[in-house]
Amino acid sequence: MSESDPDPCLRLTFHDALMAHPLIRELWHHFPENMFLVRAEPDGHFVVEAANPAQHATIGRECIGKPIASFMPAATAEAIYARYRECVTRDEPIRYEEHVAFFDEQGNEQFGYWLTLIVPLHNDAEDSQRVTHLFGIAQDVTELRNAREALERQNQVLEARVEERTAALQQANHELKLLNIQLEEMATRDFLTGCYNRRHIETLGQREVERARRYVSPLSALMLDLDAFKHVNDTLGHAAGDAALKRVAACLQQALRESDLLGRFGGDEFLILLPEIGREDATATAARLRQQVAELAGVSISVGVATLRHQGDSLESLAGRADQRLLDAKRQRYGQPHRD
Ligand SMILES: Nc1nc2c(ncn2[C@@H]2O[C@H](COP(=O)(O)OP(=O)(O)OP(=O)(O)O)[C@@H](O)[C@H]2O)c(=O)[nH]1
Image 1 (cartoon, rainbow, N blue to C red):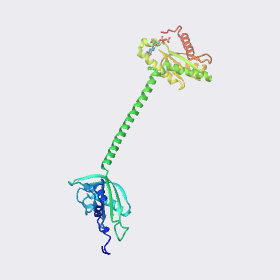
Image 2 (image 1 turned 30 degrees about the vertical axis):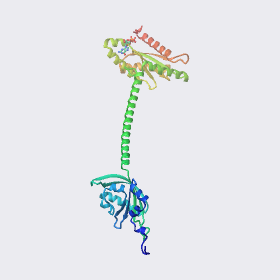
Image 3 (image 1 turned 180 degrees about the vertical axis):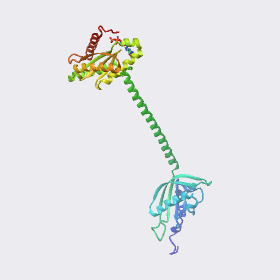
Image 4 (image 1 turned 135 degrees about the horizontal axis):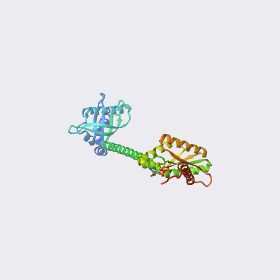
């Protein structure tokens, strides 16, 4: 070797150097991912200097000594060049995932996803800073990517299904709530007149009695019924009787305060509880109700009034006294009342 000869290593091609060592040769041949070396040309092209068998299998044709743009579809070559230029400019390794189109051996365009790492190399004796080559390793992640996308699609389907089920469940809950409200109404309301039924007015009445006794506050009860109602039924028919009961209940409900409680006690009898109302006001209320029901519902009613005694009284005894006074009122008006 003469003095002017450069270091023989510099004259070796990359491929020669690879093949020179058995271990590196073996690695190059059997490495399962694609490995390649490209040379950066002054005209902006990147020429393939070496490609391992895996890379050859992907490209499917001879590529050594050729610029990438000559054997890859134009759009892919452009994207690859952009990455390579970035690596040359930054002069540091870059790793990226790319969507690549390439031609198979039959010349058909194929698509795939690749995870690629490229490393800048320097082989200019005069300018050690200049990136002359890029060494790359690329892994085909198409299957992985497809599996991920399939999983995402499956997730979306699942999420949509969950949303659908949640909406259906919410709807069912809503319907159940409405049904419960209806059930509660049915359990507490008299089906004909819409005011409280006997069971519920008794429950509410017991609470009112307890409260009035605890706070020593007044509580009055009005027991009322329709006069000669049997006659209405007998002469005009049961439907007319029903209509009269409804008119009376509506009229009473309208005439009473929010805090007053109105319940159908049975047949043509209604029980009204007036919290915070003493005897005098209760008597005046009874008179007012009689007048309003006569005027607005066209029905004559009789009313018995009783006021809670704070010792030894119960809803039963209070309502009983109001009922007794109702009978007294009837007796005064008609003589002996007739009860079925
Ligand atoms: N239409 C109708 N009639 C009912 C209903 N419940 C009870 N009655 C009738 O109401 C009538 C009540 O009769 P009575 O208790 O004698 O009362 P009355 O005829 O008003 O007599 P006085 O109370 O003395 O004025 C009976 O004929 C029952 O059949 C109902 O829901 N609808």
